[in-house]
Amino acid sequence: MSRLIVVSNRVAPTQPGRPAAGGLAIGVLDALQETGGVWFGWSGEITGEAASQTRSPVIERQGNVTYATVGLSRRDYDQYYRGFSNATLWPTFHYRNDLSRYDRQEYAGYLRVNAMLAKQLKTLLEPDDIIWVHDYHLLPFARCLRELGVKNPIGFFLHIPFPVPEVLRTVPPHEELVRAMCSYDVVGFQTEADCQSFVDYVERGSCHGSVDEAGVLYAWGQFLKVAAYPIGIYPDAIARVAQQFTARKPVRSLREGMHGRKLIMSVDRLDYSKGLVERFQAFERLLLGAPDWHGRVSLVQIAPPTRSDVQTYQRIRQNLEGEAGRINGRFAQLDWTPIQYLNRKYERNLLMALFRQAHVGYVTPLRDGMNLVAKEYVAAQNPEDPGVLVLSQFAGAAEQMPGALVVNPFDLSQMAEALERALSMPLAERQARYTDMMARLRENNLSVWRDTFLGDLRRVARASAVARNVVRRVDATAYGRQGSALGSRY
Ligand code: GDG
Image 1: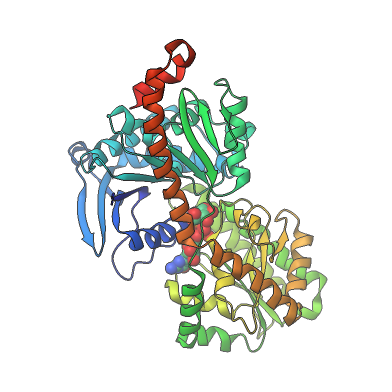
Image 2: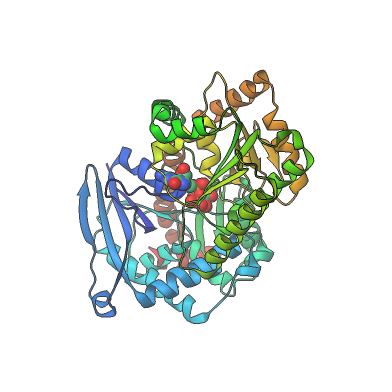
């Protein structure tokens, strides 16, 4: 059996008591712990420039997972991570061109770190390893490995949205990036819409690429499989811990502190893509339009800090704190605070139990690849008396959760109406919606995501080995272009 090598920018902290708050970390760790394998990436540490010249991966084994990590120099961190990854790709891929900046040196740093990481990984590889690369920090990673002569199957999964071509083209090296992505054997997206955006770019671009019905794409002399693989969760495991942890003190305190009021809950990393300000304002609109809810409902927003060294995030934090203060100042009573804003991290099991207390899960990102919180909220509910999910149409999860009240997060009035409807929804309707969504969560759980992706990767790798041999034998004039490119790749 071949080893699975997972590559992501950041390898999740392995120390007990340091929970990983991020969808990629949660999804990958759960998936890898089941199959066993290697997780390679940045340790999260900044090393001196001299150390960074001689770095080699630090290996640590825990259970059936081997963690192989490297440090980054300050220059690498600034250019590759803070710069091109998080100040160019992240905003643009979330349709926030207004927040995006482009700097050639940062892009050069992005390519340099991808090449450095590829070199480090190569020292650990065995011939029948399967390599699964994750997320926007590593778009050119397969090309770097191929340039080093690596022939293993390499797949890529994008956790965030893939923008439509017009938006993507605002990133100056867009073509180089998409071309590099075509060095993977399989490229996976969260939704059909994201996958279609990629195909549209390739079909309309200068390479005149094409895709067939099976999702096999041909572009720049490369064949690869492209498809949507929506990431899932383990709903029954979440249901179990949510129930078990309900008796814990923080959960009891929350319940008792509500004094029988209804609870709306949101949990997001503090990030402008999550639409936190708009969400507060829609809640304010509910209070304005429906005074009978005053004193009878509270919104609890949990927002663990994230990338807080980037200026934009500091701005959103200030903005959000300002909005919470303003709305509370306007409506609060001596014994009622409308919005409780908690800028801190909670232990995962506790978080699931907190979800179970909430009458409404309020998940309204302006753009989101999938959004695991939406899925976790539903899974954590009490089947006898489930809460209602209010979900943004711009979260990938909306494609799969028709039982939610789906809203446009730019329409504050519509969000306020959805909140009111959710707060007043009869039990039978809540149960019907919950049952439908739970069935879908079970059908498309995290193992299905992993196994479907890796199954495709293994199949495509086998097929391209066969195709390679065929292409080498046919007339070079008929297949000249792809023949030479496939030859150079392998
Ligand atoms: C990216 C994409 C995609 C949150 N607060 C705490 C905590 N969390 C956990 C949640 C959830 C995860 O973090 C967040 O996942 P999301 O999917 O909501 O969002 P991103 O972090 O932006 O993830 C996203 C995902 O990758 C997976 O592909 O869905 O679209 O942006 O699991 O529960 N966990 C703990 N304490 C907290 O305070 N322990």
